[in-house]
Image (cartoon, rainbow, N blue to C red; front, top):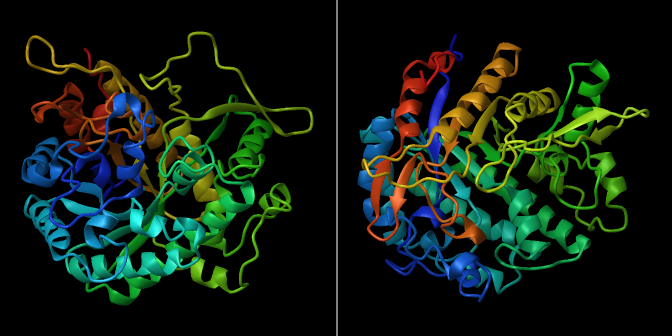
Length: 456
């Protein structure tokens, strides 16, 4: 039993995490370049300055994607590589790199799925207020114009912004990611509103300037609450929690997706954030709510819940010894069933899983190979849950494994290895892991190989 015909099988990565070449060909600093220079901000003082050297080794990496069998590659474009000062005259050398990468992918039969923003905000614009400045939406639209003008004759699948909840909460509230701010809730909500406005302006830019038929979405985190039983009251409690705003922070789904798909903030969120919601022109939602072709969601884990006596979701403790990844994230395959289901029910949009994977303890064995049975088992469990969601009627169109390569994992540096391909950062040697070969079989069978014991 496989996935629906036409299901998109892909791999994913992002610019700052793999490209390197941070000071080459006119690229200027992003907030992450500056944050990495702050003592103690990143594990072992590491940075993405060299990363996986994908900027120079992209042809090799495209060949690896081809060998894995993926026919789609989710990449991000580096804003400060295209517009070093965040706006102004585009940097031709930066655009040329993405030209070469796009052509290389297409020549290998791989469709590029381009994300415009995966956290590398230009430092020059941060110094002018960053996401707190309403003009950031205009700046982002200028950047989108430059990328679309260059690539849209060949790129047809676009995502505007990756994981707004993460870069806003961790970078603007908790201070543990770039740019390292600890803003008030009112300031966080102001920045979030400008991010949403930037999304809308970017969709407008893509629609207005594309030179080939464009499909547009975005890729927020999906914060999943899943029921521990099949009882209707537990399912309803999990749905309401997944689609609710229950705490005074940005870690939720609907504060971001409701404006994009419904043209309004959720009432529950307005109540939860009472006194902190910024004033903004009433017609902003007309800009934010643009026609969308799909919803991309990034899912790694979930929270088990049951309905309490009032029907509200009560978080359930996981059993002692519950499996954890190397990042100490819980292994929750059910999240890839319930998360897409709840999001599709609320928004009616086709769903793509734009990130899913795990950090594992991987190294090159004495036989020269990288044996990662945990990644195979993890991915198999999650994909079986995703296939069940498809079978039960959730409109899921594709899956992108995070990540193609081991890479720079933000404030965790190079400590965490998410890749299907091992990277020796001292030599930049790539070694496909056992999971890469297994994933090829899954792709070739359109998911039917999930029914086979990979360790038999």
